[in-house]
Image (cartoon, rainbow, N blue to C red; front, top):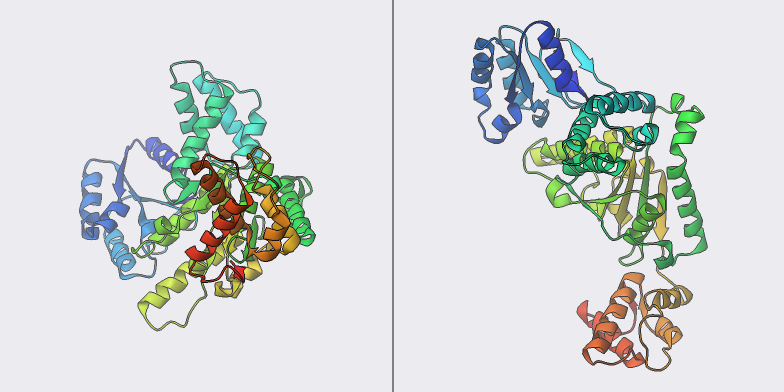
Length: 445
């Protein structure tokens, strides 16, 4: 028997319930650990030990094996030789290394009404109650396993759990999964910090509107029945350094009241074959369930162009890209990709983007507005600051203007004086020097 589904969808509970109906307990064999430690040959021995105890062997972690690899063929031979019942727990897209003839059970994602029912039962059994179960079910697209664990954590508190405690318990479970490969952005920007041309602002208004009204359009208006893919929203922000791409991602999260998680590519990409795809699947699944926004900064390092296959390295690199393409098609959350050079992305990714926005280099008027945004009225000033002159003379993008403002304020603080035009001039020249420009003219981006 093969049971597929997301983390927390109830796969293990279902297998244990079926085993209990047959009067048997479940013995779990962790195949992922055996793969990591290069001890895959022990799998047959582990299965034999579990079977001798009269338990139902449950193999976990076979997702970590590339379905087309020699290891998968080796596992298939081992499982073919196993005498007796056997259960495999896989992710929702996992491929079972078994010969045809097994029973396959796919656990689908629950609807909002089904999640509400799970919440009601779990809260009732724990002796807890929340003010609005439907709102909780709509906010978190989690499975019954995650719901049960979150309620159990809230019920275990030494005091009477509140609505906030239940909400926090769910977030902790989802953060534990996202936190292995992504970092939560704590300080989010607001629209008051963003200076962009009107056409880009209009596109951002539409983007926010699509995120806000997704449930109404797909669920209430019935478009879910006619949309096989593209239920999620993916946006590509391209433009030079410091033009506000990451800042806007934070402002979107702030307006919508959603969490923003920056994917850490150093923790996603693994040297182990198949593990990169597993990490990506985990972050996409958790983001969908948490209703969080994923941010892929410098996306061209992951969503790169596929190449002609000449070595095994090329094949596995293309395999990761192909997985991303397939996962974006089925993704039902919100993801924002930023890149300085859009030409580095595979064209297939661009076709799958719901929005593609180019952030231009700011003109004189926009640069002056940026100087004013990053120098709030609370900063003490000595004399008038000619920000118009700074904007016209120094062609800097918003990120460098922000750095210059911060540097100038520290220069003034170190001298125990108010901010002057001279401090700003020194800060600008320091910014030009830091990137290796000998003159403080030209474009700084």
